Length: 143
Image (cartoon, rainbow, N blue to C red; front, side, top):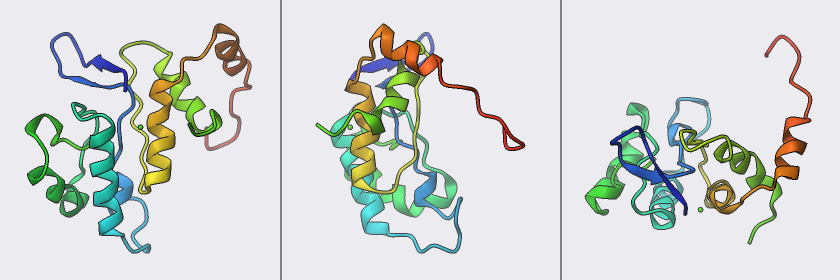
């Protein structure tokens, strides 16, 4: 995975991170958590980009993220990836916005982890970026 440096002297991280909040009860307390899958996703993320630490393990998912810390090197403990271009495009567009933009999409499943992390490998052309820029802005009360 391509990498970038956070800040002037910060750590080198993958250009796409992994958000772990969805692995906790932070978004949906009614849905049971799948601990084994969550730990598997974090391990897979570390395998895809072993030096990254672009994500944060929220307090509510420490039980999920904790086991990964003891079985991985220190540089990879902060757990924060050829599928179709479509699911990777939003992350590729965000990465193309500049070296100081590091998207951290959340996921709970290996399939979406690979799709999200794959955005780091996609380099959009000027025409692709123009197509994204032509998308109308969202409207409505939510926005």
